[in-house]
Length: 260
Image (cartoon, rainbow, N blue to C red):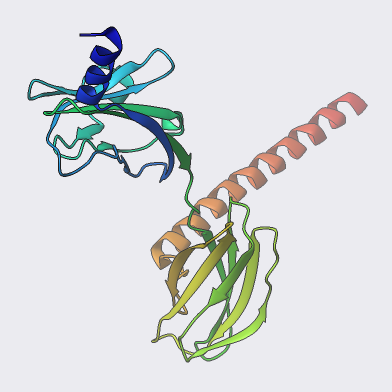
C-alpha cells in the first residue's frame, strides 16, 4: 500500500480535531467550571487537563481512574466530570487566572484539544456602615449614618422603608462615601437603613448592600458601667489633687527653711 494512502487512513482513523480557545470568568472565593468542549455523544477514555507551556498535569482520567493530585496548589480544590470532561476549580484565587489546556480521547480514538483562558475577578464588596446618635426631646433621637466602600464605585446611596424616619440630609458622593442624617420619633419602633453601592461594568451592573437596624436608645451605655467609670475617674482625680497639695506644701516648707 502506498505511503500516502497509509497516512490518509491513519488520519481518518484518529480524527484529530484542531484546538479551540474560549474565555471563562470566575470570582475570588467562588467556584469556576471549565468546559472541556467534548462531544457528549461520545464516551471519553482519556482526559488530560494541564497548565503552562510544558503541559503540567493538574487533573487526568486514564483507564477509568481520575487523578487530581498532580499539582500542590490545586490539591483538594478540583473536581473532574468523567462523562463531560469538565473541570471545576473551587475557592478561586487570583493565582488561578491563566490558560488551561485540555486534551480528550474517546473510545473511538477521536482526539480533540481546547484552550480555556480563566479570568479571576473580585466581586464588589459590601459597604461598611458606621453610626452615631444624638438624643432629642420626648424619646426621639438623631442618627448620623456613614457608609463607605473600599472599592471604586459609580454610586453609593441610602434607603429606608421605615415610615417613622424623617430624612434631614443625604449626600451621594462618588468618592466611595455617603452620609445620611435621620430623625427617629419613637423609642419603641426600630428603623432599618440600607446602604447600596453600585459598580458599572462593560455589559452589566454590579451591586452590594449592607443593612443596619437601629432605634432610639440603642447606643446608651449600661448605667452600672457609667457610674463605675465616673467613680474611677473621680478616684484618680482625687489622688492627683492630693499629691498636688502635698507637693505644694513641701515646696512651701523648703522655701521657708531657706529664708531662715
